[in-house]
Length: 556
Image 1: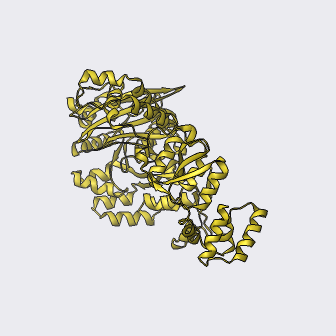
Image 2 (image 1 turned 90 degrees about the vertical axis):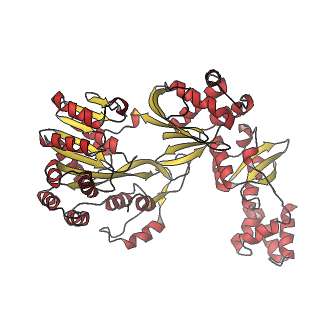
Image 3 (image 1 turned 180 degrees about the vertical axis):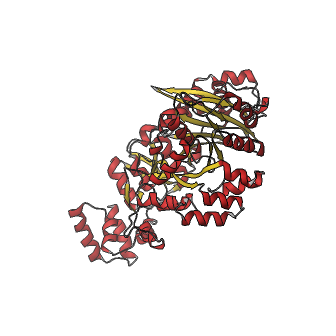
């Protein structure tokens, strides 16, 4: 028996005694556990001892999974996803009574016995790179079954061609495997809640990544020789010039899956290995226009609402790209949108269409810039103006003048926090007295990932770390996600905003006029009740919404 052979090896190495082996064999009959597990539980050996013994009886060849073709879904599904992810393994082939399993650790006795018990077959192990095994698991599980099938068809039907003209590209783009792959790309991205799809050509392969909850994840990649047809297919759908491969292009398309319709914004960028494509998925159903759901604390939300109700002045929302500024702006406009008000937005690009609001798309190539549109917009008798982004001194000056002459102006700026916005406007050339008079409120924001509700558990390590913080709560509790199929084993599902709100009080305006430093203004604001981004993030941790590691990563 193989188990006795393992026990005999351990005896020969002096790691256990014959009496201990007899005891374990009797115990195994009662518990049905594996001999290796029982030896470790009893403390007779360490896991390393078991692995060392197994090296004498089990040898595993190494395999490069990137070169393996024709893996069948029905073979992979001989084990379930949880087992595959737990032991970092995946079946890749099957004969009559044996399956070949690629595994990270071919000496893991618990994994081997689990695989044998679950499949009822003989197991032949081959060692493979961990990241490539995980890529295959992602490909075949979690709803991605149609992508590998499409890739398999691409590998079979697409031939390598040195030169492809425009007509050949158009024909290739209509090829069934190409169409199927592009369709499956959209379907799976939407199902996985992705906000962006990245297609990146490299020297020898293609990278496909989805941005989910702000983080890029690798997904199954098509063969390199199929990429020109895939690019052309996406260009045709996006109404782009398929013959132009030297210059960047921007386009749009709509994807309809059942009753759901998603707008897709396509951007191409020529690189040394081909055209890189990024597609932003704009799902109207996910657009949060209710400010109560964005992540505001009660006090901060009241300040924002009060500023929106004012007939004139300026509100600036600041933060890096992808921090949710547009959603905050749209929710603010929706809050004050009534038939009595003429609301106009100037955007680049217009991401979502808002009912009852006039939206203008800037077009710099024909001179339709933020500044030019804003200048002419003042003749349109607006009550509220949203400027997508203040990029230059001209736009800043016109926006501030508009806010001082009876208009409510809402805009964005790229700064790290609320107080930095003041110095940024200084450096752009805006006079301190204009900043002090015009601005009502500056709001800085970030997005933090929310803990997955299905696998939420107490985070003991985070609770211990809380001792370093001077918190009002006596016994704060922190949570984390263990990882499950719902959250793609990340522990996170969805995102929520955290805010830092600087209200321009009389004292703040005086400090701006006197050109006080950022640090002085920040210290004063904090002493008078302003919560920093870090404090807002920690509050989300205590409320059980996000993890401590996420809060510390996103804020400083």
